[in-house]
Length: 240
Ligand SMILES: [Fe+2]
Image 1 (cartoon, rainbow, N blue to C red):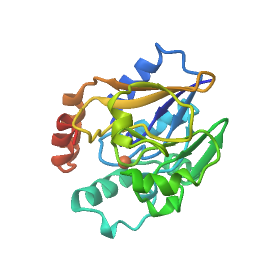
Image 2: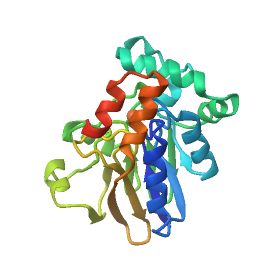
Image 3: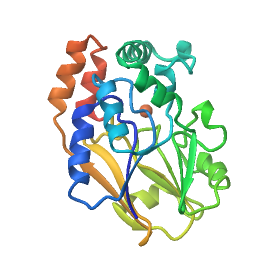
Image 4: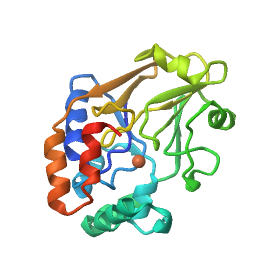
């Protein structure tokens, strides 16, 4: 099976459509979404519809939970809070019902899927370094755990320093237990504003990191026009 694994779309329809256009050229058998379909961007409902139409296997993210009132947003920063409230007002009952039924963790073939971490996914913690990864590498039995949440594509293995690992890849055959962050479609934060996603070929055990240009200016204009905080538009072109 060839999987396209996308995450952290955050209501950015321009980025999502650009990624799906690229997937259309790459013989994808199944789509996987690692959560945070909504929040920050101007097209939350349209992005949820795309994920439903793709019949994507999908786990829930913290912004999905927040948009349906399942996450306490009193600790969110002011612009994230404003985005959550705006997003909730744009989602239909059908979309909210879809988000409310998404699981925290899915396991299939040789992969595990989770938005944040395996040790209490509802706590929405991050795997940012080898120390965080060490705990989580012990919590799955199959080959790869795909994650999102930090918006920074990277990977972790028991025997290797994560920085060293990431320096040489954009394509890699996986031979030992690995945690892979697929980055963000709609709000990358690694300094590269292009949409990020991963293709996984389970027969070859081959992971490919992809970066895709999209119409950032249109996504920005929509954010500003909708009254969402301007910083959400500015950061798209910075990739931060
Ligand atoms: Fe996110």
